[in-house]
Image (tube, one colour):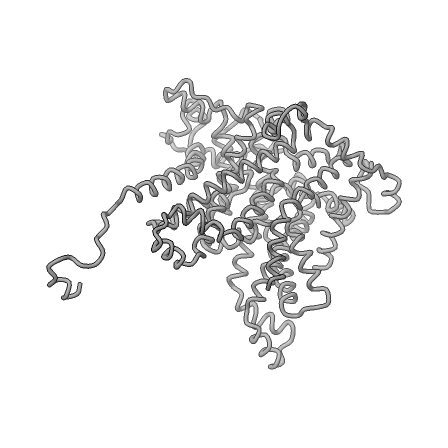
Length: 298
Length: 300
């Protein structure tokens, strides 16, 4: 049974990668003949990166890397935007909350329960709640205006330029509690004596955090980074629930692109899957190096 | 407390701290503001679901309802339209139950036995096996979509409940096996050796010694599987077929169907109903849940 499952994983992945180099139209079964007949080399990848919906960077030659996001549009840049922002915000907010929770506060259990409950929910549930809150018609914007703040404007989910940031908000809402829980476990794992020693030496608490505690928490931080990033790379349900890729296709993401090209554009779909596999591999490298590095030392 | 202290002329010991310092105030203020951010959507969701549509359109999302009504709830459960038919989200609820129960049982049964073999009965390629498992739990789902479509099609079960159950079982196995392997490997080896000396066999050791000792890890993996499968959307859309859509997919269809205008109160009631199963598990299971998600977050 397990051998079959592993076979499915290994063969399935190899199958996807191999057939991304062919021009197949309907789902074949693996036969070498089908593969040789349909072999087109990198053509699918070339087409994929020439498709605006996947990625389009009109002025890439004239700008620096810092402006990348503002000129590139499409599924892949959207995913990168989401990944970078949600990691940056969820990790810093999660760390802040974990540090505050670690100050021997009252009702710690209550706070933890509140921060973590969104993580139990489905992305579809999260998505629909936030779509409702952020809907310009009846949500936050309408409510604030009704309360008398007429100039209040929050129409991100209907704005092509801002829609990804709206999705980031929902993603942070769901994921921060989880980052906080892992960080808190990491903080609790640090020896009390370290704190005593730095107190004796008169080092302020914030410097102890930055110079001693954070470096000591490196394994936890790497794990968090890997988990959050791999979640961001495969983001799908959240986007489907909030905007379904809209307005237009301005919040499309790779998983959705792959799924939508299922029947129309199989070759591209497969090559896009392979790109995601590569993206995931890049994320995993630091983690694998850490895990295997540990083993070789032991 | 002590007599010595009461006779002393000057107070001894640490200076008593004021009840609340400025620093403590900031700590609590930040924690409470953040808590409000996390609670607000829950509050809005619940309030909206108890409003009538007239109240939703004229009112304010923050204002609590003045005339609470269960209409939206009964409509969401029983008669909301998904675009195909109008039988509410209950269809999806039962489909989700039918998908979740068998795939949880099968994957945990297989994973626990495999984890036990890997930890205690090393075989020739167990290291390779282990590495593939580790990588397998990280592979993005989308990479496996097409191969699994072919496999389920060839088995003749594509677009049926069996297909989703199979897919969930397959994707649950790597991470579940890792969980069990690590847990069994952490148990003292002497137990295993003593049992062997006493003549217990492969299954005897597993059922009479390891399983009774492993209630925590079974709890963690049940939580992980049930919430994971319940919250899944992608596999449900692809493999289940329209009549077997799980609750998350039904919810999405109800919200997106515009038959007879948008009913936000019904949408929110359906949203809460979909979230209620994992939320209940979360509130009941407490620390096991945190352990479960920590293990499960790496999943594909």
